[in-house]
View 1 (cartoon, rainbow, N blue to C red):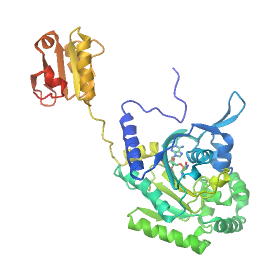
View 2 (cartoon, rainbow, N blue to C red):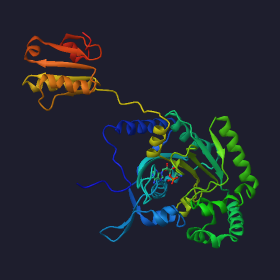
View 3 (spheres, helix red, strand yellow):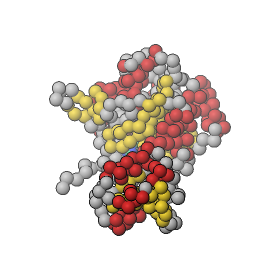
View 4 (cartoon, protein in one colour):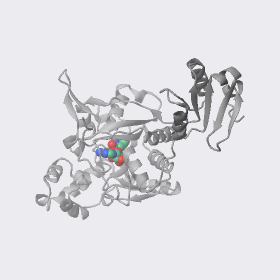
Length: 416
Ligand code: HAM
């Protein structure tokens, strides 16, 4: 037997209703905010992620599924959704269309991570990117879309928010961090020593316990923000409060990707059942479009992990409603298959979920199977029923059995 690779999972037929529901909710929320769907390929040129996600990130340094194709091109399975969307935005000159352009996607992402609960090598993200709006309203809208997505499942996880500042603030902050970490860097992990040179902000995201202790007393971004950035962040908090968003300021939040400017946010499980793992996260990235060769365009967006959402719901004891059961099971006792198929197809056209016997079971076994399917009605079709033009219908909920004319059955009237 060949087993499933490490760190990935099947969605089995008995669980797929949960995924269907998540997708429906995502489409519904996206529709309310007028987001249009974008689909980008599962692999891109490796360079896109090197430049897009950032060469100082763990994702790029440790986690990418990179391979050479038969033409010796270096390709990478997408580790996240944003870079591909930005590539497509530029390649299709979307900046020439009326802005803002608001997009969403549901996509698989691939990261070579150490598998654990809620941390997979293939995961799924519901993501959103709002291009061409450098305003606090756009920031609020992004957070509200994610919040309302969660609320649709009866949960309201807290959003940690932080402001990484404009380019000037970040330059000042990077210097302040360098000054602070200079005293400790020799005792920190090899990754942090590299980060110290390439991007000291990344040190704040280190998961090594000893480094975390040093990080705890590092300067906070709030100490160096310019007036504009401060005012924007205050305004954002006012608006989030008035929209009843469950949020907290977390000055240490930097997120694991290099492209963010200004706002970053992360939805977290404060019970920590998902470990250190966030439920979803995002932020503003005003330089990425230009850095990838496009016309300067501000963007704000987020990505929500679907597998983690499902685990979180499980932890909270929240069940996703099951798909509706089979409406009608057609039990057949005749060789006149075209007759049976015609009844089934007519009822399906009326919108009913219909099953019929396709494995030649005995009548008794067909009823047993209909029971298992929790069918609401069983219609029995035998030679007698065909001749009399009256079909036997059993209401499986109350056990009543009666005859209904074929004419009425074909109109979907099954109650006699
Ligand atoms: P991210 O925080 O790297 O952001 O991922 C977004 C979400 O994807 C995480 O919060 C988590 O729920 C889920 N996720 C990430 N890695 C895994 C994994 N290994 N296993 C299971 N779930 C995972 C981004 O990817 C950005 N592109 C989000 C964004 C969009 N920012 C702006 N626009």
